[in-house]
Length: 274
Image 1 (cartoon, rainbow, N blue to C red):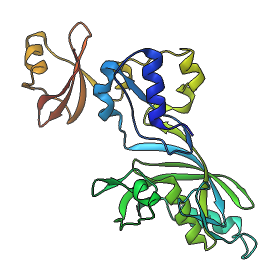
Image 2: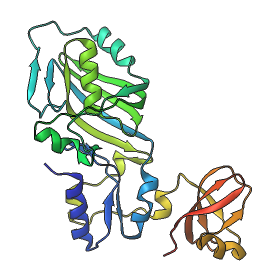
Image 3: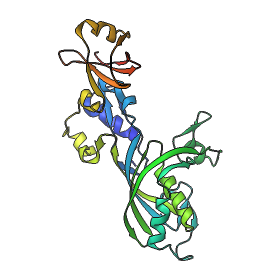
Image 4: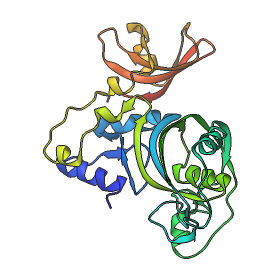
C-alpha cells in the first residue's frame, strides 16, 4: 500500500531534489488529490492547508471494524441478521450529518495524543480517550444506494474523518457500517482532473504549477517600488486593503511575499523572493 510519504520520496528521486512535501496526508486506503510542494514551493505548504475538501466515499452497511474501514478486524457483522434500512431512511439519516457536528477521532489515525500517534497505540492494543472535535459537513450527495453499499460525495472541513463519518452513520441507522473505498476529489482549488498518476510522475509526464498559480486564491497587491525593501525585510506598510492574505508583487510582476493586511496595515508573513 503506497503512503503519502512514499509519493514524496518518489518525487524527490524523480526530480533529483531534496526539498519536497505533501499537503494533507491521504488515508492509507485512499486515492486522489495529494498536492506536492517541491523546492522553494515548500515555503507555501502551510497556506495550501485549506479549510475545505471533497471526497467520494463508499460505505458498507452491516459491518463494523476496529479501524472503521473494510481493512480492519471485524468486531460486528450484522448482514443477514437484521433487515437493512430502506433507501428513504438512509437518505434521511445521512442528511442529519450535514452542518456543524462533532466527531471523535478514530484510534487508527495520525492524530497525536501525549506525543504518540494514535495508530501506533492502536497497533499495540492500547485505546486512549479522545475528545470530540467540531467539524463541518457542507454537503453530502448520495450518489448510489445498492443493497448494502452506499456511495456519497462529501464536501467537508479539514480534519473530517470519512471512516468515522461512515461508522457514525452506520450506528445511527442501527445496522453498523464502515468505509469500503475513498477518493479525495478536491483539496481547495486542486481537483482530481488536474492530478497525475505515479506512472506519469515516474515518466515526467507533467507540468508544474507555479507558486503564483498555487496561491491564486489570494488577492494580488503590487507594492510601490519605494516600499519593496520595507516589505521584504519584515517591515509594515500602510495599505487600504480588506483584511486577509495577499500575494505581494513588485511592479515588474515578481512574486515577493505573502503578507497579511489587518486594520489598514500590511505586514510580511512569508518571504518568497529567494
